[in-house]
Image (cartoon, each protein chain N blue to C red):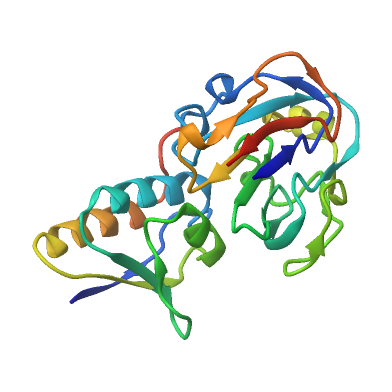
Length: 90
Length: 149
């Protein structure tokens, strides 16, 4: 299991646009991927319902987790999405 | 089977015509959109269920089949930080389809430089799961927008 702590840099938090990009990327991966806020149960990173429900805000840290081949690379990509301040058109 | 009702009155335009790629390309999920009448009103619950997320400008309701529907009032309206919106319910509330959830004014949204178009999205749904999708023509508040099986 590979884990990664990432700070949410999107100014609007993990809201519609960054959440959709994040989930779309996670959903392409063959393995299970989870995202968790501190003190809360991890949720399925491939579910837009779960990720919108997580409601991670700007500046909060989340823990990403995945296992298996390519997990490190996947977490790198997901981290880069969460580390962007803006996603596309403002 | 979930019948998803229009949260606002206006004109159905389909997701592809939403001026925001994240919705237009169905990245959030499949569904449709409504260009609302330009007058203050109250956006309703599109389905009966529990409000799992409520922002001033957007909400998610999950029905007893586990189907989550996102209503997003206007485009990029997160940046209005609630201006022009007033939540009428709370996260965790159980609501019936048709109950008012957010009071808002599309005129105020438009005056603030944002499109007031409302996206109604089936979360975690395959496109093929939606039938009887309304993507054009006038709709009343409460008109069925699509059926989710």
